[in-house]
Amino acid sequence: MAVIVHRCTTCQHPDLFHSDRADGTLGPCSYGLCREPSHAFGPPEILPTWRPATLTGPAVPDPALTEPGTRGTGLGALCGCEDCWALFHAHASADDGAGHVAAVA
Ligand SMILES: [Zn+2]
Ligand SMILES: [Zn+2]
Image (cartoon, rainbow, N blue to C red):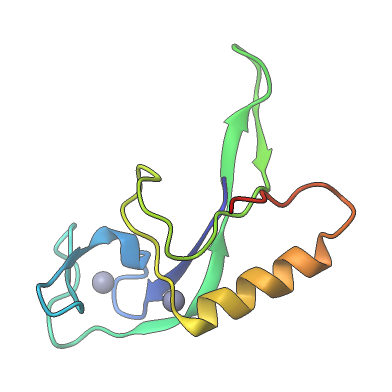
């Protein structure tokens, strides 16, 4: 289950690691490496994830891309901005026919 994130240009952590503010913007990184208002977020990028091929086997890439804006991934709410959707669709069309893209309606 790969996800699309924006990486913080200050601490390099994904936006998922930054606390949500009431106004919808992102606060400091949960590791305390960046503090407002000094951080910004770069363009969306795909964060790869891994899963075990068997119960005790090595991890293999899990290429299924989670839709932007999805909640309840265990990672917090994903960003659902236009740039994220554009990247999602670009990735989905590139993978057409390979059966790798999760069709989550
Ligand atoms: Zn940060
Ligand atoms: Zn976004």
